[in-house]
Amino acid sequence: MIKDGWTITHDPYTIEFKKLILFADLGAEKMFSAEREGRKIVVEVKSFSQISKVQDLKLALGQYELYNVYLSETAPERKLYLAVGEGVYRKFILREAINFAVERLEISLIVVNIEAEEVVQWIR
Image 1 (cartoon, one colour):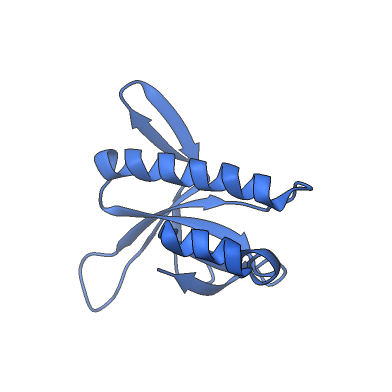
Image 2 (cartoon, helix red, strand yellow; image 1 turned 30 degrees about the vertical axis):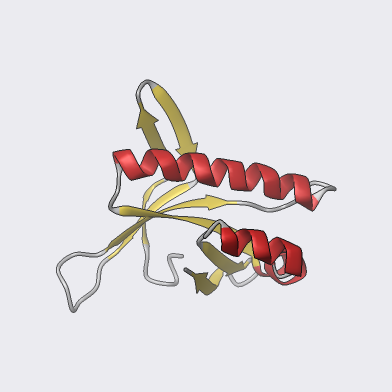
């Protein structure tokens, strides 16, 4: 993300809501020269390294939804993204049934080339 012009502002990003504390992987900001205000995001990174990728997906989607609910109250200016490696995206997320769920739930994704440490695609 740094190569893409983002500044990491929180590592991890703390979400506090009514005495509940959660930790997303990163908080980041990007300033735009054409405007005074920038974009602020929170990123949860997922490797999908378990034997069952579907189990990984269930956990990731639950975590994403929970973070999103609390961020809407505590930091509505921040957009939440789920970051995944390019291989996981191509081989798993793009499977018809998986992609259907990700689209239906309106999950925002960052697809990353792990080796090059570069953002390949922003989705939503």
